[in-house]
Length: 153
Ligand SMILES: Cc1cc2nc3c(=O)[nH]c(=O)nc-3n(C[C@H](O)[C@H](O)[C@H](O)COP(=O)(O)O)c2cc1C
Image (cartoon, rainbow, N blue to C red; front, top):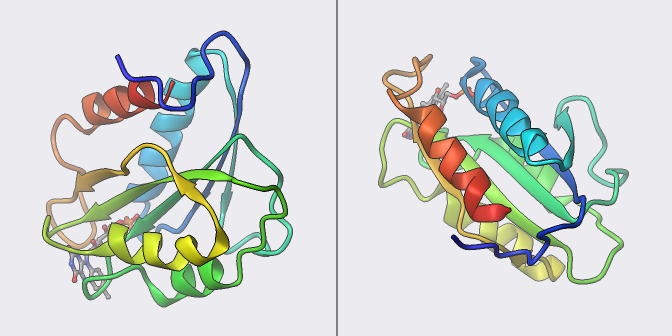
């Protein structure tokens, strides 16, 4: 099994910043938080509506979680990522995206926004489908998130 962060045996600090209009992404964040916590790591989460992008806590891994609006992250999320200030060198991140259309480029757009900030993506992000604007989440999303947590740690 992959262990991209080479963290095995060490307690790692994960920070998840999310946007979620209808609560589907938030549900994924809560599930993923539990999956990572069960592995012995610590997770802190914030809605991007509650925090300033220039004062987020330092972490070993950042996860940015976003819905897809008109083929991309919502304006709020883009603004948050544009204004993100992370002082540590070589900060690592990954993404979690919800969408109806699997061809949406939301991940790619988030990566393009973070690349100039010198952040490294490890591993590839996870995509979760919603069956309609307001959900529900695709069947088996929990398994996808368990596999994602295993991939990270
Ligand atoms: C204004 C708006 C535009 C949307 N446009 C897209 C889209 O272009 N492609 C897509 O796959 N989903 C689109 N959706 C559906 C969202 O992907 C879905 O609402 C979201 O993933 C649900 O996550 P949330 O409950 O965390 O907000 C759109 C939703 C809204 C509200």
